Image 1 (cartoon, rainbow, N blue to C red):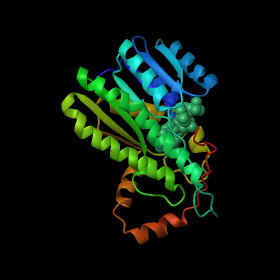
Image 2: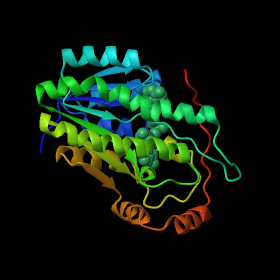
Image 3: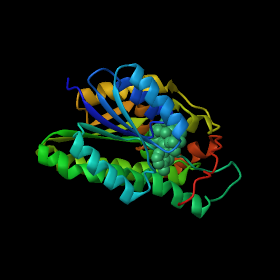
Image 4: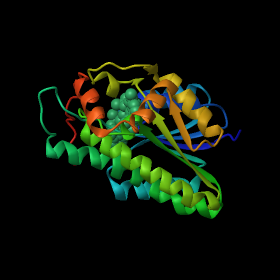
Amino acid sequence: MRKARSVLITGASSGIGRALALAFAEPGTRLALVGRNATRLAETAEAASAKGANVEQVILDVRDRDAMRLWIEAADRAHPFDLVIANAGITTGLAMDALAEEPDAVRAILATNLVGVLNTVEPLITPMCARRQGQIAFIGSMAGLRGLPYSPAYCMTKAAVHAYAESLRGRLARHGVQVSLAIVGFVKTPLNDSITAIKPFEISDARAAELIKAGLARGRAIIAFPWPLFAAAWLGRLVPARLYDLIMGRIEANVPETNERLS
Ligand SMILES: NC(=O)c1ccc[n+]([C@@H]2O[C@H](COP(=O)([O-])OP(=O)(O)OC[C@H]3O[C@@H](n4cnc5c(N)ncnc54)[C@H](OP(=O)(O)O)[C@@H]3O)[C@@H](O)[C@H]2O)c1
């Protein structure tokens, strides 16, 4: 099992990103933690430092392409990253009686969950390939496996991230860079708490981080959990569209619209 020594995590101020920071925190590890909320990011940084890691907290908006590129390139020159985890993300969706998502909310989630992921990963592809060493991890979702009628834009962003991760994986392997995609089920976080729905097999953020870390250490291409939900979602892809729509349409879910807008 390979040990990552220099790790970049976006969205480290809450939920899965925070739990990942704590999971990787140990003496000898350097953590670069990105988020926007200074107070919550400082709390994560303090907890990770207490576990012996060397921590840098960076207030950055993943949607800011230039700022992300400038900071990531400089940080990578100073302390080359072994692992980047593109985790930062938001959700948006539909209330029970809503027809379509607010167009500005759709653009906002694309900016964070898709363009923000590109802004995180792109600056590191060339340097990692040049070193012939590195690992790129994407945080996908079961929602990326097949569209859900209550969160169209969220599903779109995660499906796009899945396709991008898969494409990159095949391209970069021969350059010594591993690409992993975490396909994540329900994890108890503020993002997940905002959604009203049944959440089968929900797990804690600490357990999710543990599973992602273990999968990354093994260099797994796909890190999917919990497996019963993954199996059901995977099988769901084989169900004919009309039947799938009928089943999913009966599920009561309320996903609030994001307050985020393009900055
Ligand atoms: N929880 C689940 O059930 C679940 C399931 C599948 C996949 N996921 C994915 O897991 C990832 C983390 O979600 P979570 O559940 O841990 O949510 P969360 O607790 O709400 O945390 C989201 C993190 O993303 C950061 N973030 C959002 N927009 C950002 C921006 N523009 N720039 C920088 N950072 C930004 C937030 O930082 P600030 O608050 O500081 O801005 C926060 O640290 C997301 O990609 C999500 O889609 C979650």
